[in-house]
Length: 329
Ligand code: SF4
Ligand code: SF4
Image 1 (tube, rainbow, N blue to C red):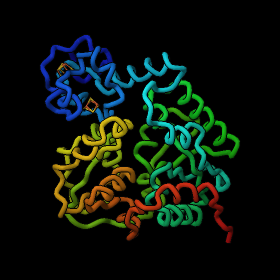
Image 2: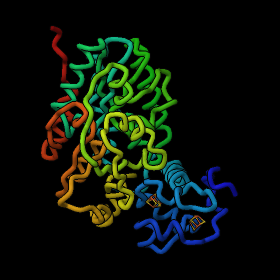
Image 3: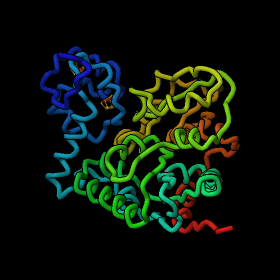
C-alpha cells in the first residue's frame, strides 16, 4: 500500500505496533489502531493528534478512524457523546455564546477564534485595530466548530458551519483571516468565503517584524504533519527554527483530557522547563503556561508584543469579546 494514500479503514492493520509504541494513549491500553473493538470503547480517550497516522506503514489514518468511531457513537445517542463531562464545553460552543459580529466591516475580517482572545485579549484588540486602520478590515468573534466536531456531533458541526457562512454572507464578508491554526485547518475550503491566515495577511500588508534567535518551535497538532502555517511564519524568522517533535500534544487535543487527565498532564514532560518554547497556537501556549513552562506565541513576537498568556481570566476574557465594539475614530 502507498503510505501517502491514507485510509480511515483500520482493517488493513498488520499489528506492527508502531502506532502503539508512538502514542501514550494506545501504549497505556496496549492496543493498536487495528484493535477496533477495544478502541471503540476508548474513542473519547484519544487526543486526535494524528501521530499514529504519521507512523503507520499501511497508510491507516488512526485519527480519522477514531473520529469516525466517535461519530457513530454520537449517532446512536441522539447526536451527543454517550460519556459525561462535556456539558460546559457544549453550553459554550454548540451555539457559541460569546459570538460578536458587531465589528464585521469591510470585505475581509479577522477571525480570532475562541482561545487567542482568551489568553491574549490585549493583543487581539491591538491587532484588530491595526488591521482596521491599515486595511479597513473588521473583526468577528465566533467559534469555528472544531470542538463540537471532535465530539463526533456531525449535525451540530453542519449547523455551526452553515451559521458562520450565513453570518459572513449577511455582513458582506468575502475573506476570513484566521489567527488560530485549529480554525484555519478546520475551516479552510469549507466556507463560501476565502479562508486565509494572519501570517499571509501580515506579509501582504507589509506588517510585522523579523524575529531574531534560534527558536525552539512546537507545532500544534493540526499543523504537525505538513507544517503549512509554520512555512508561512518562516519568512518572519531570522533563523531556521528547531522543531520540537518529541511531545505528542499539548494535552488539550480531542477533548481527551476529560477522560485522561493524567496522560494530558504528562504528555509535555519531555520539554525542558528552563527553555522557552515557541508556538503559534494560543491553546498550546495557554496549556504550557498552566503547566509551568515558558511559552511564547510567535505572532506576538512578530507584532512586537509582550503580553503573557492570561490563564487566570481566560473565560472572562472570552466572554468580554462578545461585547467588544471598536470605537470609530
Ligand atoms: S502502525 Fe498501522 S499497521 Fe501498525 S499496528 Fe498501527 S495501525 Fe496497524
Ligand atoms: S490520534 Fe494521537 S492520541 Fe489518538 S491514537 Fe493516534 S497518536 Fe494516539
